[in-house]
Length: 305
Image 1 (cartoon, rainbow, N blue to C red):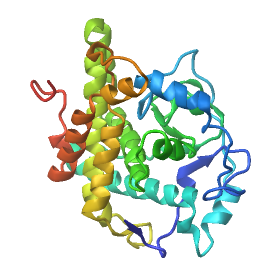
Image 2 (image 1 turned 90 degrees about the vertical axis):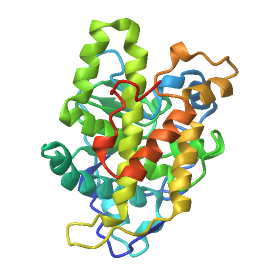
Image 3 (image 1 turned 45 degrees about the vertical axis):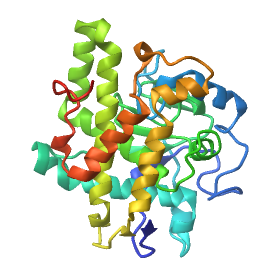
């Protein structure tokens, strides 16, 4: 996977609420040992299987989402070696994902794409879905139409869950933006209504929503090399089969069954909320192979066993 060093990094698509902005020591301008990568979070990650890589309404009522100060991030991402920095690379991933859906959503669903900001945070953050901390993992909040991530999560993903591939990062973000797409076209709201009508099917419906977001991530991956910045510069110069395999491998590390095993428990399908490792891999691959979001109808009869 190669990013175009000439592509404009559009930090306006980010709200940087980290206390130090984009600068500081550590990996890619992120302080090592700060919020997010702690033993507590690892424990929570393995114990609360359903709380990661998904859509999140949290609890405790909505709050006013925090406003970010992108000054330091803007400065960092305007430097000549910006794409070497973790946070700037993730800004470009967001830029690519949103550029893709800006064109694809009207073509596939007849809906205008409405951009959603990604919030970089450390330790804790206020969202329209309630207060969250780093242990919540990356998530999309439909109440304020934002994606939230503590970027130190990628270290946890690599070190604790065995998904060190660089393409794991855009896969995570593309999954979350898949939820934004679901929100825009009404899939998420319809799913919630069905959960209310039949609470006994709530977890199965959640699994279908999450697998569809995995599929949408695969659809973006198929079209990623065709995405450009506002000036027409390609964002990706290359995306290889090895990169796609890293996405598939990551999906396999975060299935409900795999995480239940890692937490020391038994596999209990009744508690699945995101799908098995095999299902997540299957639907990411389906999205990539088909390159068509309409092929991602996980809610169709028989689509998910």
